[in-house]
Length: 113
Length: 115
Image 1 (cartoon, rainbow over the protein chains, first blue to last red):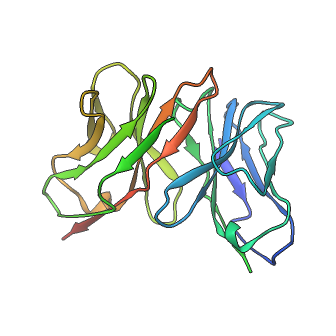
Image 2: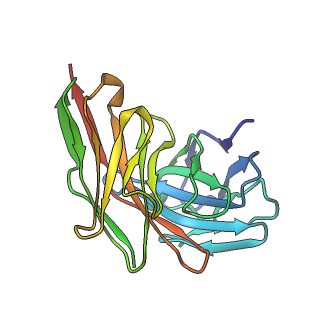
């Protein structure tokens, strides 16, 4: 049981490049979400999903896309990277809802030059 | 709309003394409240949660929190600090929204333990 895994751990992009941050869980959780963590701002919700085929926007969705084709995977796509997207990104999952215990991945540290 | 305010960005205590991390919340409905801990360069881990059962909630590693609706507070306490408690702590609120619950995080409190 690997829990929540995220790849890559570190990434450096140039402005305008695109990339996908991967997130997978093997706990059969329905609820998955993406957060970004910036100094002094806590974690802010980017997008979330309550099950395969269902996604919704969080607090800071602009510049990011998600899809949920399977229960296990919830990739986050940066369409055209900007320096403002430099951050640490965390994926989390839980059984059904946000009120259930969230299990967090180890994070991806992204730098956009 | 829901929100969370962590009243201290940094708290320092001596090893063996009590810990108090303060959190106030705002919610239109009956909220669920959580404390998560993040050790350096790690993901977050749940310490404890309140979901409308007992107002005094006990968590892992000797931490507990009391839900006070009249004060809209959910402060985290521990009787005796240990060096391993040094970490960042986040107070979190979740408000039911037709099943699509979103979490709102506070800005965090960094706890330093002085030997």
